[in-house]
Length: 332
Ligand SMILES: C[S@@+](CC[C@H](N)C(=O)[O-])C[C@H]1O[C@@H](n2cnc3c(N)ncnc32)[C@H](O)[C@@H]1O
Image 1 (tube, rainbow, N blue to C red):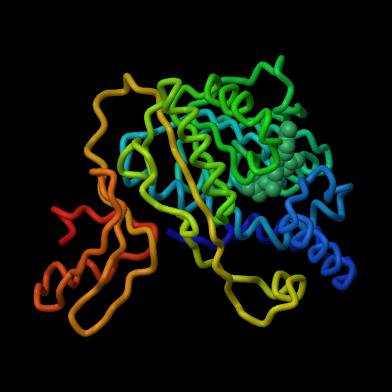
Image 2: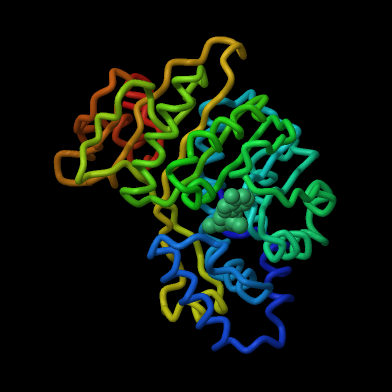
């Protein structure tokens, strides 16, 4: 899986940056990241085109990489899933749609929903020379918090870094609305913070309670065995472009995006395969072998050592990383 932005999207962002003063963008990018870290919503931070562009420059590469990675895990769990309609709820500059098309090229119809005209305008401009389904995507300016909102149905509904901006008191209503629009699979991606994980668990229990079937990353739908102050999350490494580095004020040519994801499907699409265990921490390689922290289908978390002397299993285990599935029977 390639976590880097598709060339067409990177080039479209670069074209929008032409002639812009980099220090102004860096200031906006800093204000955005401080604002998001402080728990403020996009509506308070993104006031117009320049803020939306600063988001596309500094956040879209990371949110793209997280969505792309989550979809690659979903594909591994549900290889037959072949959606044609995407609803990108809280689309922002549209990076999630690009990730979805990259992972699931059969998507032929895309609807971007957002309450921010600045984000919707930028998403359209960035996709103008992109794949046909993105260039011709439907635009829906709407407020997910509106209880009377009728969402268009889709085979894949995506809420990437969106539910983090929904006030807790109305979260379950918004989640139910997204679920009622879902014909195939609902993918929620959240920041990989303790709050993102806690919100994910709330979403998980709400959806499982109304009959959604959990696809992943958890290998079971019972109570989460991870205990605070620990929290479940994953990381995806992605490259930083030169402008991205300048805007972030850092020298490293890459960054690691911490994220958490949850996917749900409508039951009645046949029995689900038994879920594999999931690696929930960076594997540790030592003399005796590779140590994995696994969340297991029986609802427990435990450490497993794949010994170096078991050469075939060790060779397979070396290719496994944080966030991957590890089938204790097949992978070891
Ligand atoms: C942090 S951004 C994420 C954007 C994009 N999904 C991504 O992954 O980069 C959150 C997005 O959700 C949108 N949003 C937040 N609350 C919303 C609401 N109540 N109705 C519609 N859109 C909303 C914001 O305008 C913003 O575009």
